[in-house]
Amino acid sequence: MKILEILEVAKDRHLSAEDIYKELLNSGEDIGLATVYRVLTQFESAGLVTRHNFEGGHSVFELDDGDHHDHMVCVETGDVIEFVNDEIERLQHDIAEEYGYELIDHSLVLYVRREGESDDE
Image (cartoon, rainbow, N blue to C red; front, side):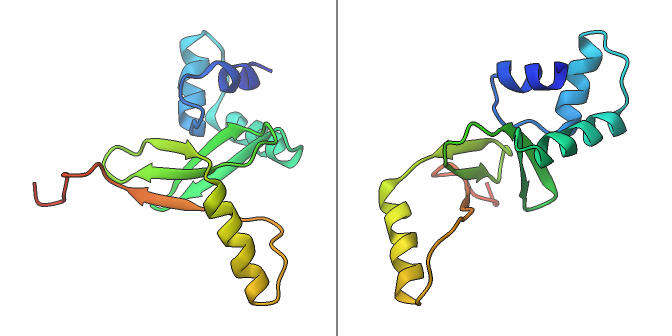
């Protein structure tokens, strides 16, 4: 239950298992990292949390509140930004239909960097 509480009150909605583990240790809980992973996997199976596996092995968890949203991941900071765009949602359905399919679900992740920042700066 403490893990769910951490996910509910976290300023950053997307936490790694290691982030949750550190929060548990900071609050005086005696728990192992393997247990955190096991509990998160159980929560994922039960539909309580969603796991996102971003490029570079960056996996984070968030509470599954039933609302669909997409993500942007900053390649400089690793920050995860949620967004909803009705036009993108419509286009995805249109594209699937154009190819003779019905869109059931999707995952969209944009890898971004703040304008004006580049690798050679």
